[in-house]
Amino acid sequence: MATKQKRDSNADSNHPVGRTPSGRGSRNRAKARRFVGGRKAEIPVLLPKESDRIDLTLKPVPLPLAGGYYELARDLLIPAYAEDPYLSVTEHDSYVMQLLRQGLLLLWVVEDKGGHLQAALLTQIARFGPRRILRIHAGASLDMDGQIESVLSTLKAHARAEHCDFVELCGRRGWAKVLQPHGFIEAYTTVTLSLE
Image (cartoon, rainbow, N blue to C red):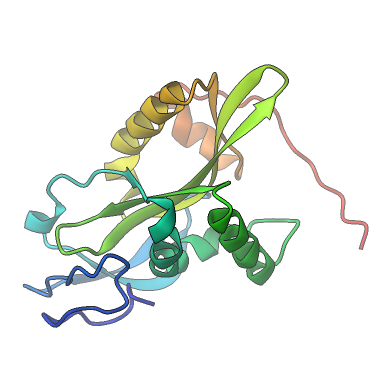
């Protein structure tokens, strides 16, 4: 995937909007850290120089570009799918692509100035009776601690614009502790029994 490849100054035909990642300066090797679950994934990535990290903003990806961006974000997001008790990683990946094509999921990304993905997440609007909920489906970030406040601020603004009453994330129990300082509460616990 694009996060694993060495960047050069030639045009990157795999980049969904045709921008050329910069390739200037040295990059630090690191491992991606999942947004859902918070564990470090086994994905080598290239971190941007400090000067490339200015104004990292979470932005929604327009529907026509979602498939291309999802291809780039897949390496970050797939470790989050491993926690899903209902679908295999392959089934989950296929299901996400289907929902993106139908416009039922919204892909959000954070890119550095060179066009390298620093974070990606998927959201959807769900209904529960008269309530609308912005549900964070899955996500990943290379710098969760440094990005969580701006990401949550952007998502809360989006949820208000969509007339949502709540923002919800379903994930491992550790997320309750991480998100509690940001106003989240542990609303319920889900338990699952496999019948296979």
